[in-house]
Amino acid sequence: MKLFFREMGAGQPIIVLHGLFGSSDNWLTIGKALSEKYKVYLLDQRNHGQSPHHDEFNYQVMASDLEEFIREQEIKNPIIIGHSMGGKTAMQYAVNHPEEWIKLCVVDIAPRAYPVHHDSILEGLNALNLVNLSSRNEADKVLAEYVQELGVRQFLLKNLNRDSNGFSWKINLPVITDNIEIIGEGLSGKLTEIKPVLFIRGENSNYIKDDDFILIDQCFPNAAVETIENAGHWVHAEQTDRFMETLTNFLNK
Image 1 (cartoon, one colour):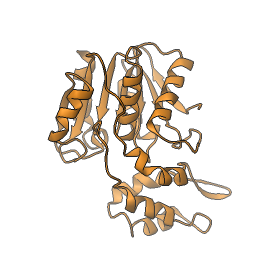
Image 2: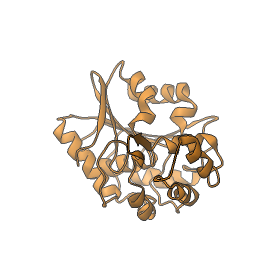
Image 3: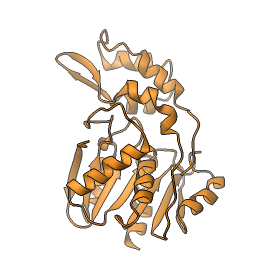
Image 4: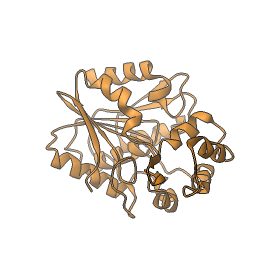
């Protein structure tokens, strides 16, 4: 799997993994800020962005994609940052390859299993008839029947590609739909040594609850958890300055 990636800056390598329905574009602002001191790689995970589509879609294969990328780019001792689905990929890679990284930052996701909660989003995306679609505004009107939040719709509709042949999905919507339960699965295994790990959560998000702290400590001994006030699941976009301050403090330790 040859993942699409964006590369910027120089120095200690940092790899950033986006969440479900996202892409490397979502992390450009953070990537540019980090690139002032670090060599930053923003990846599109399989079935997302400009990376290839594949029928196999689970955390073990996505962790293997990351392993392949690190090996082919000859990256040594990276810092790995992952948001949501990307956080689970990062955790799985970290557990599978504990000697191949130096720091891990997981953004607003816990190592536990999650029930399927993207039903309305998937229903709305699948309701779009791309063959007859005439504009993004039309797509937004259809999607609004399933997803009320304008910001979420705008985020989702970034996955629409338009060329001379009309509209198409950047994401592999059928495979994501068929495997959505797998994407909710918990981490397989745990880290067998103490390494620097930080979990960052949004105050208004329910993805990392206080009850998850026990499991986090079991999977990643002595991991720290920081809460960003007035932020939801997209912590890095909603409170960019506070997120960068928290992340920078972790990186500088």
